[in-house]
Length: 245
Image (cartoon, rainbow, N blue to C red; front, side, top):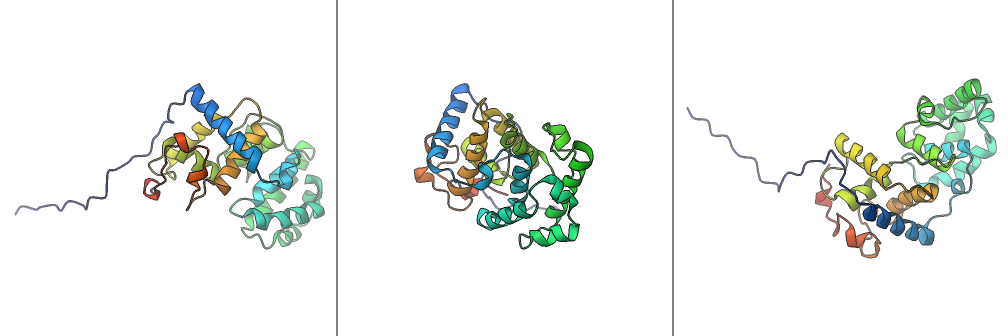
């Protein structure tokens, strides 16, 4: 008996995730940086953690902002720092008190991890956060993104970042098709984040990347018609079908 295998329905061409970043010329990188920083100087948000280079305060903001909107974080950030102004103060607090102060932000593993980081920093580093990536990432709860944020925002180092908003911007501008969620694509986007990072103004550049993704290059309805990247954006005109999970 001959078995005839039914062909699957056509669903358009298969687009594989790129495992290597697109080749960017010096002109490509410079153009992207200039447009992004020009946009940020006109549209960047005034947020309290952007008015400090205190590593602890920046760490608190980054942990609070994980999966939580800015407007929910703002009052809790001020309350938290009023109660635990330093790593030493946080380390000395009871864990139950720390988790209660965190409410109602949710994801209660986050305050416990902050508490553990504070205790370890006091025990091993004199109540300070170290200024190198490998040591920062040795803390449980500090991953590649958070280490990059602390290094660039607190210590002024040339360190790349990649959160959800940044990944969306880089994927759309430089890649345009495929799945931004695959492991291979995430490594590609990390490579892109490093490639476009300027030598100077790293603080503003990384903050600009996050703001651009959070307010203009948003997930569902990006504001493409007013986007300064539009002339060279790989995803323009935006088609959600090109961002297949």
